[in-house]
Amino acid sequence: MSDALMLVILIQTKPGQRSEQIAAYTRLAPLVRAEAGCLQYDMHPVDGDEDKFVLVEKWTSKAALDAHDAMPYMIEADALSPSFRTGPATVLFLGPVIA
View 1: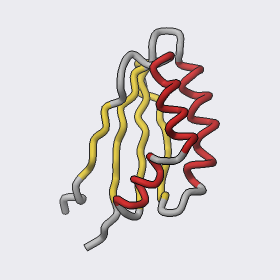
View 2: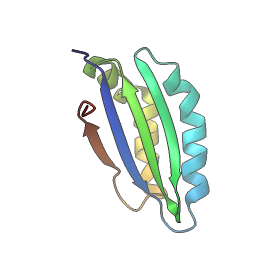
View 3: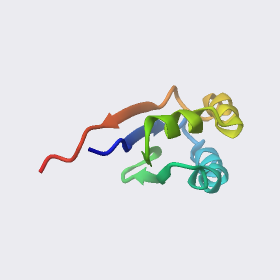
């Protein structure tokens, strides 16, 4: 059994603040993808709602995810996100694929 974790994060930006979310992701993505234990870090816009995004993350372990959350650039990004988001992101931890 794998210790890998998969997360889906639902993000809602304030009207007119879409570009701020995209810019934040564009700055963070190369840093996050270079972290030990990062297997996937991809943001997708939601069709039909220009202010909604889904971030898909996959990590080798809970320890890798915890280290990611403690990175200074993630702490800074979390502090800035209320300026362009309607509220906290919704984080969903996914279970294993159902065969």
